[in-house]
Image (cartoon, rainbow, N blue to C red; front, side, top):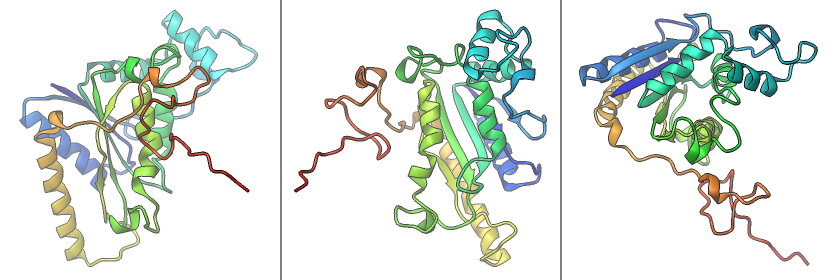
Length: 258
């Protein structure tokens, strides 16, 4: 088995970096081969733009999808992106490790999606969801948040964590991955602290133990359900006969309004 870990944290001594290393060591101890992309350490450029492409299709105007497709067709995808796609192709499991910043992943990870999920290479209209490039591979978010699980509950002040993570999970499903339930490390306090050092240390120790235990049988976990490509109608809307798995894509009951 092979795994690829994408780490998006600027501090090599951070708890996120530690979790990435812990995952690598745990899986390797089980006989897995593991590769790691440390986005900050490698200086990954998250800004998709014209000067990253040679032999442009249109030198006058940069159309992202058109240039990505042109590069895919002509074998001129930027080298750093080609390397990442190759690592994803080789992996049975992909783990994205990052801190939640302003209710979203760090910008460098969003830029990784923008650049690595190349139109014409990683996805296109008939090459997505259950027909996607990474079909048969699993992906999982592993992230840290500063406050408790209660604040990220359906009625918590930080927002429902399942809804907040849905766009990233959906992006992974869009290109064919089977998406596992996220691993969320709650209460990883940093600059602003609510707990004593002893409480934080005990909490972090428990997080590590639970994460290692999960990784011991990660390949047998079931995935989050997403709709298949044939469950969309020609108008792009979910078919009435298809199941709805999320508040983001749902069947809306028609109400009579007087």
